[in-house]
Image (tube, rainbow, N blue to C red):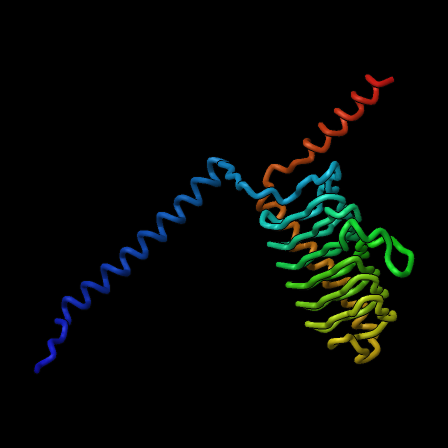
Length: 252
């Protein structure tokens, strides 16, 4: 049998049409995006990045970035310049609080939570809250549960820090590190593995780089704030304060 081959002219014409259709589609998409911005059209999703729970309302400052696909729920305090990135979950819905410190960030897909409400205190006698200090970088895909992470800490991607554990200041956790319950990571060290073990002491340069990286992440977060909130929502917080002041005055 003889196999027929496409005529060169028809093949070239088909290729030209495909490229033309692709370029037309791209032009239409770009034109639509331009018109949306020019007309200042706002699009709203059903997903709510912040959610009250049992009367507890997440607190965030004007320069806190919570990504549109993130979830911040319940008794959560976000300090200035903190950022919660895409698909991250910070869930304080078990009567225990969560704090995200100044210029700290929670990376894509990470989960920060607490033990259940049935656990009223840890074996140490402390409440099972989750505390993330200042200038802390939590990488992507991490899990933090009822633990304490002090200032200037870099938590690598896919790390797990479990209940009752304490990560002291100026620490770097290698990606994939598992800090077991009630384990203590001393200050100024690099740890890794499962269970976490000391690798080396940090140099002064490594310690200083943690704050520098945290500030870079905040600078990127500001760009995202401007993209998703072009007009700002400061007036909303002002209206809430005015409403509370009026209610307090009426109650006198």
